[in-house]
Length: 384
Image 1 (spheres, rainbow, N blue to C red):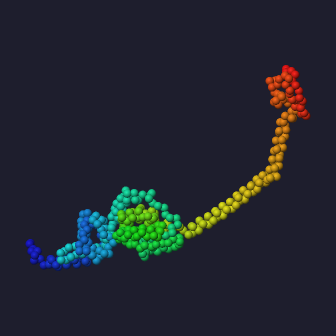
Image 2 (cartoon, rainbow, N blue to C red):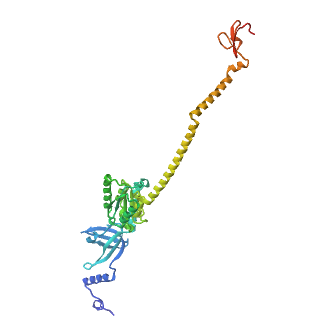
Image 3 (cartoon, one colour):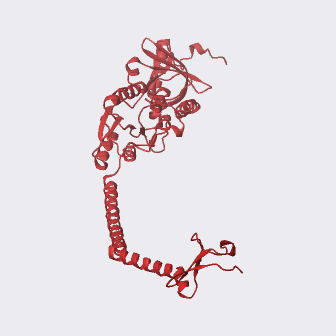
């Protein structure tokens, strides 16, 4: 049996407008009002203030749009090839039956964040800007520190409270900066301002801080130009960005990386309690040293007094007298007169020379014989 479908009254009948309206109603009722979409941007184009994107997963694609009114509120401007995470809803235009994703918020995916991190890190590493040998030691007692962070913020409140507790003598210069979205240029401008400020008002270090958030929120600190500015800054830079597990290129370019903003100021400023303890220890060491010094000097004076006693005038004269007496006795013992007293004599020729050998005298020569108690003159009669 043949049925004419054109005359089948059980089938619903639509005009084009009615069909499109029915599709739109079906989408409104049967689809989530808002959803998350993970995709890759294959094309990005700005038309009449609206940003049109072609979103794909490698197999299928769909169009997306950020209206101009919303575009000013979005912190991330995607480029072709970027992985993104989108908050959006479906827009269906009945007039031409076209479907598009209306985007309320868009952020880089973790894949995009890590890819940019690796690219910038590799580039700056090749140039030597991330070499650990370039890192400078932090000042031991900083007199003035510049704080770059958002104002107001919990990170700044924690920094100010911790600085006051640890070392209230240090001056803090707070320079407000944006830390959300594509604000690398503004942070770089703040660093340039600090360079000029440092020429007139000397600062000892800079703290670049941002409170917690997702790793995607820290993508601004992977900016190449910003990291170059940090690496070449004239004073040590300390970063306290995000959480302990979050690592950015800025952390690698800085002179010191802290786990959190609070940890940054803790690492930079000494502790009052520890400083007081060190002072007490030094005081005790100086006290011990002075006691030891006084005892040493006292002993040295006692030793010198004993030395002076041994070297006093009376003792020296007595010692010299005894020495002279000993020498006198020695000379007396060695004197030729001692030999004369024992019966020996000294014979001299006419010229007064002592006669030691026969050759020293001749016959008929007048000689003198010295005895212990006098002299005898004689004439040589014979020489045997």
